[in-house]
Length: 138
Image 1 (cartoon, one colour):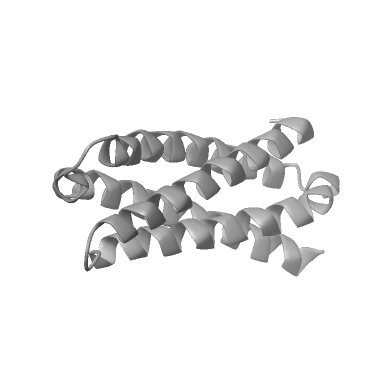
Image 2 (spheres, helix red, strand yellow):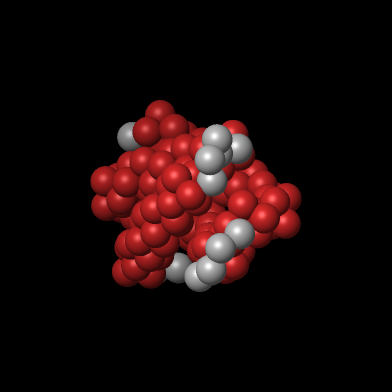
């Protein structure tokens, strides 16, 4: 992934994570006594956005780094995150689709959402590790 692709990927991920966070917030407000998993999803999405913002701020340094492996690994993680957020958004959209019974739809899809949230956490942690490693050598 070239520098422009990394930038575009980051912008897309920031956009979809913001939308997902808003949808999770709406689910939490719709369901009385929202389950902890909804709040955990919202928190994970916010943490993910913070890490993406850090990458965006360090992007020029990352691309200029002599270590060509870092941008390549970062690109792979961004691509993984794009696939994961797309799948998560599809699932969340099924929960928030028009009509009543959001709580029932949540119950039916919560295991899928939990899996996506866990995968996003893994990607976020991997990206954080990359940033820490990069910052240690800059």
